Length: 320
Image (cartoon, rainbow, N blue to C red; front, top):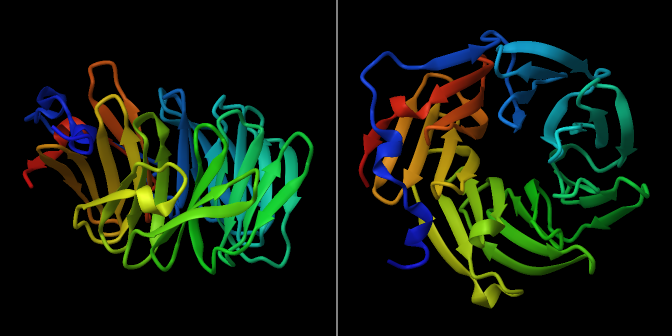
């Protein structure tokens, strides 16, 4: 079995279909569009709508805190790896860091004149935040010193960004289907590749399995491996045909890829086929929660249905 196929090994018993009624939880069912969400320690859920961030206790399914913005449209968020802070980006180019336990404003950084922020991410040690802008700007913000570093030769329309686990690199994706890799210390692009025919809507740097995953509005998942500093060494594999994919998650324990799209479909990809959940509402962001019995709960932010939690045992198998 080759290295790329090994990414999708999944024990067949993990998703054995259950004949009982579907186990789906709706959190704040009539809430506005959920644009982004994140989870800490399988217990804290943070969900972002147009001008509000809600913090949910996943055990009780109750909102425990809320933050409302000052008349600015919120666009994206990320939880720190210790769960203590939340970084939020908005349509005016402002980055805010909140204390997750009190929602008190801790730090703020405004990058004026550069348009909406499309994605924000903490690095693994929570010492830096990266933000991507619709204008094509990338900003790395050192939280401790307050310094910022800018990279602006990506071109217009960056939609997503992620740190490598070693914090030396960034990966970005844009509206033209390009993925670029950046060296942070040198503040320069070191590799790029054409991943999608249209928007790159989400990407993940999965360093534990030496790959970058990207998804786009062309319906494809692109797996990029063998990155060692230049485009010439990259190996690309494309899978799926799933409409306008809006978000992707990776489950390293089972080597599976999970996506959602604007047509209301959640899919789990593994070596032998896909498992699918279909709904009637657009889906914008997802995360996964592995459970003790090796099943995964899939948490999805939707258009008009708030946050839904899907038990993967109720998803239907479709072979390739």
